[in-house]
Length: 126
Image (cartoon, rainbow, N blue to C red; front, side, top):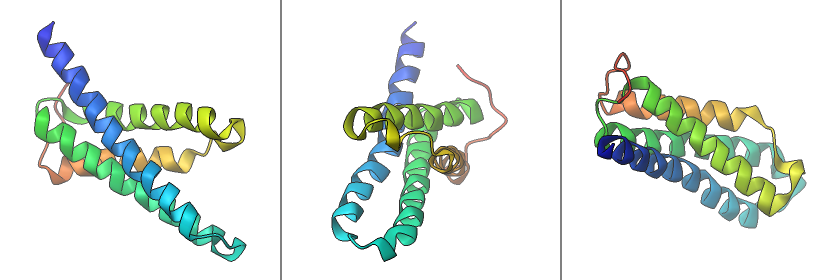
């Protein structure tokens, strides 16, 4: 039971890191980029921040839980996206929900982060 609790804590820590980087970065970019001509560039910068956040969360999970395999990395990305959707709903309303590109960037970033850390993507869960 203690091992599963530790795994859950690592998962939440990785998801929080993977979510926090694009959330805070997106808020800073929103303060800096006010014009409509920057809207497309802003969108791709936010997707890039999701990728960077996913890599950071994936590296954290792969470092703290090396026997987790690709499932723990995918769960980290999905949990980060779930946190993002819940907080977006609370802060911005339902109009901010549903874009699948951040999900792809978070999942891909988490898997890439685990691969960069040297985690075998063929391992299983706890």
